[in-house]
Length: 387
View 1 (spheres, rainbow, N blue to C red):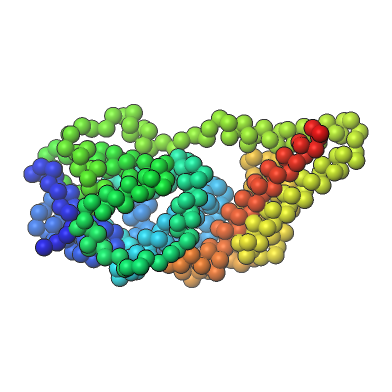
View 2 (cartoon, one colour; view 1 turned 60 degrees about the vertical axis):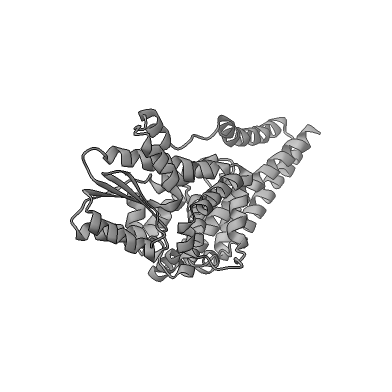
């Protein structure tokens, strides 16, 4: 008997709780579509994730450049780290990540049954998770992913699927270690999935294929037969704006530094002005260059980070990492093979050994170094002048 949870909400709505790295899940999905013959198959995917699953090699320089220019490098690194962890579990189970969801798509198409993608756009989910996580939560997740401590026992995916209490425990552990991420990745997506599936109900016979971790939450919501309010839909599809204090810091800090430069210049205090300028240039340049160096960037990319940081730190619309990353990509241009190898996401080492990964790291680390350098230089300058 299969361990895959199958839940009937009513005679016209059935949920299947799958694991995205489980061949048994894929087989059960195909069997259910063939035997139950739904009018529509609802799948826990958005259009971007479906496109990636169907064509994982599709990624080019233009896409990489766009990521850098839009300031989404850190977000892409976060997404890549999560994907690597999931893919490693898939390799232990001997399956490709998403095998169950692709099986649902293929089986529906073979039976001429329409599909509906009922998950929220992955970019919105990641942005909301990143925005809602506090610094210590981000650090905990990053540390747990990079620590990479092997389990004493191999993961038995099918046994995991059959143990609802264990799945619930894993979800609760996520909420405990990173409440902000847990709320977005679990609770919000339960709301979104249930709301999307509810909208498909009516006279249609719906088979919904969702992750086993969402089964309990989605089931409870669907049993109420309540549609999401427009206000809740708007909230789930929005990206939280930065807190006003961060906008003040983002724009106020450079204005204060420029104001101090101008004040010293007007006072004719050239000696102090040179000392302040040296502090600003040295710390900005040194730490931005250090970031690019830690990413194993090309010497010219490291130099670019050093030269750009003192200027970009005074302009909130620019970032030193963009320029360093662009130089890195120009000098060590990723090939098609680099792009394909990086998208396999089977090792953390790809971020340093692969040209695509290195471009991302140079961009992110140079930006981080530049930000730290600007903060240290600014506080040192203000502290010196106040003494």
